[in-house]
Length: 309
Image (cartoon, rainbow, N blue to C red; front, side, top):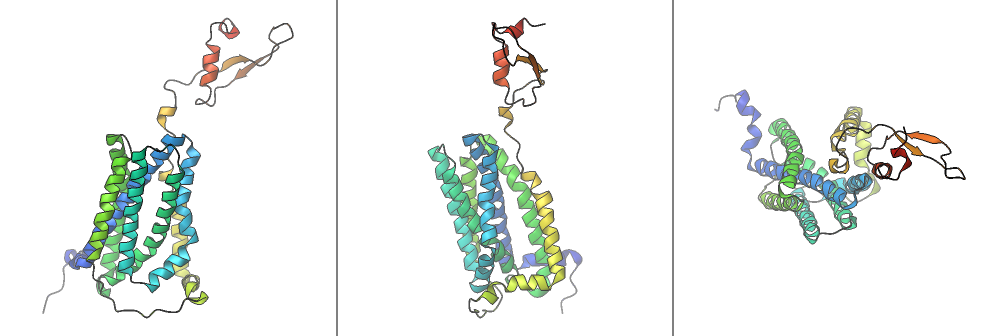
């Protein structure tokens, strides 16, 4: 009879299952590639339009499908084979990376095709989330599930941290998003092929008919279990208040003039009938990005402020 497992061995027991190892490797590649592409898309959109509002629209294009399709995505994850759905989602990620790469190589000067790809990417992510979480219990026995949960969370957090930093380095090194999209395409393709060899350990489940009760069963369960409802609500506010703050990107530093803030400028606000100044107005240069024209106008040789004491 085998002796009791040591703490170190029991902590890594989930990696004794090849399906779990394949899934975590594929998931790491997908999360890293999507985070890399998020950085590249943001910079590409801003370089095209130079409007911070378009960065918010890019995030909305990926976020809105998840809000609209969360009931459908959960129902699909319960009715169909999850391994095949994961392969389909990872293939969709690869397709999105290929489309973004083609748009980058063509040198487009409009953001609408990028928004279309981001909406498609949001649809895939809305399906990938529930399917990935539902597939994990089918890869390890019940007694090894706590170890699998801990390692899956660690892998996801590490990929979430590594992806944006790696995407920024690659974008800066190759001076454009094409290299980032290429890496995303390679990673997503590798993930799709890695999940093809996964073998689940659960039995085949009977499919329930599609009714209103079955679609809303998950919401009723969450509302009935107050502990789960409280945990989800706490996580929701943590993501909204803390998780979104690192994704707020500042405006491009290249758009800001270099140097100290200028002193208040005196400009004429009007003239009398004989061409003499009617009144003076002191304008504080509060919008340092937008008063470059005013400063050039004041520096003209024939401007009256050059001789004003």
